[in-house]
Amino acid sequence: MNVSSNNTPPVSPWTTRPLVLQSRRPETPGVETFEFAEATSGIATGALGLPGQFNMLYVPGYGEAAISLSAPADNSGRHLHTIRTVGNVTQALFRLQPGEMVGCRGPFGTGWPLEACRENEVVMIGGGIGLAPLRSLIGWFRANPTGHRVSVLLGARSPEHLLYQPEYRDWEASGIQVHCTVDRATPSWQGHVGVVLTLMDRLSLPNPRNTIVLICGPEIMMRYSALEALERGIPADRIWLSIERHMNCAVGLCGRCQWGSHLICARGPVLRYDQLVHQWNVPAL
Image (cartoon, rainbow, N blue to C red; front, side, top):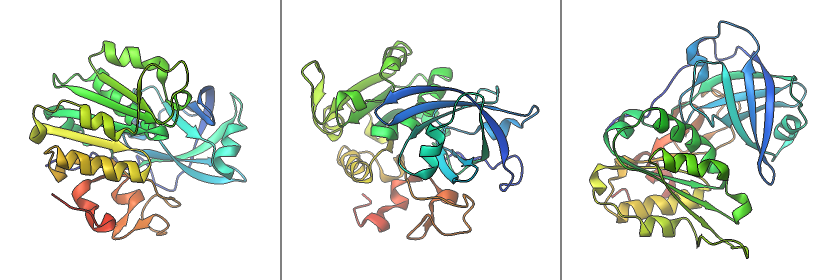
């Protein structure tokens, strides 16, 4: 089985380069998508990153935060990051206005397994803000059609918390199946109600051993979605998860993101399920 894609920074991992905020777009309560551009010319293509990787965004006086890429690289020096305001650094980012600058290190970490995605049917499962790192992969699929079925299963607390809703029709127009559910419906909601796991239970899987499952969201959701995938006959080494831990150095030195034997910033954030079972104490098969 292919290992996940990975891409080392084009310069020293300690080098901070400037990015200029181009625009901000509200997504859901407390979540916005920020578009940044490289402030200097001649940046290496590797600095754009691969789907599933993350950058360290630095706000002077407040520090750094690890933020996943939410769009695929397009060689334009454009970076999209969907950010939820949860701490001092992200609150400082939310105070930025277009034209202001931040520092950036990266990209870092492992990405989604692109070679495996080319060769198999794909099921993506995103919960809440966990859809952001999957969005970069959705963009990659739209630019690189594989001929295999791609399904996206989305869950959120309520309809207003479903990320990127205006984009769903475009995804479907490019051949990607989109299925949504919410924990709590509103009077105007006409879709499915229930946890995202119920979408997996209802999904047709004609070739489970030739299907890749990619999951990002709350850890409890990822854990049970992986177990459901195993129940449906998908092998453990075909299930991939994006693990979130507090990342400080981003190069595996400080140990802040250590989880069992894994330093998530270096060996993750994308890891295979069979690499995680010892931490979760759940079945591998």
